[in-house]
Structure formats: structure tokens, C-alpha cells
Image (cartoon, rainbow, N blue to C red):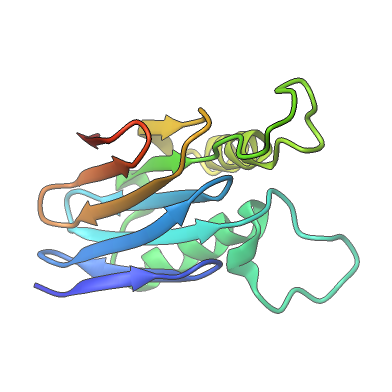
Length: 161
């Protein structure tokens, strides 16, 4: 079994029994797509909700709107079937000590909303999520069991979703 670590604004694809891991999700979102039948999974560490319009995007994995399309494309190339894909997501915390009502500052909430929108438009169901709050997360997805482990420091917890 290999453990593949995904950095900020990166994506990787894996197959059973491998694991996909990303650390330090604050306002960023860790999104996993998986095909339970073919045991193919992909993870992306998303930083921002939307790519700037009218520019040449050099890193599609940085933005939810472009990252999800690219992750689906890579999953299909790796043997996954679109009609068998599900999603799990974690992160999207409100990391700044300002009002929750300030949507411009709350990048985490906007990241989660854009992920939900893109998944809905792509007809991919969200199987589970652990999003929001004011605390960071690290996640590990097991391609064999299809479980996403979500770890937090404050509050100190480990959950499987």
C-alpha cells in the first residue's frame, strides 16, 4: 500500500489499496471523488472558489470550479466510471477572527459552496462531508475501504466519514 500526499493546489489519483492524504486544511477544501466499484479515487486540495476570468490558468487544481472538472477527467482516464462516482469533502473552515457574516472574508464557506455547485452540475452525489467551523483539518482517504479519516487538533478528534 502506498500513501500519496497531496500538497496545496495539487491532485493525485490512486487505486486500492493505496491512501490519499492532505494536511492542513483551513479554509481550503480537500475533495475526494471515488468509484467504489472500480476502487479508483482522486483527491484535490482546493484553495479558492473560482478561477479568475479571462486569464490563462496555469494551475487548475487551485480553484474549485476548474479543479473538479480536471479531477473528473483524470478519474475517467484512470478507469473510473462517471455514473459510479461519489464525493466526500472536508475543510472550508472560517479561519479569520472576523464576523461570519462577512462573505468576502469567509473563503472557506465560498469554497464549500462552489464544490457543492460543481458536483451538483456534474451529477456527482456527495456521500459525506465535514466542513465549516473554525478549526483546521487533515484528511486521509483509503481507496480499499472508501473511508475518509478527518483529524482535527482543536477540538482534538478523529472521525471516519
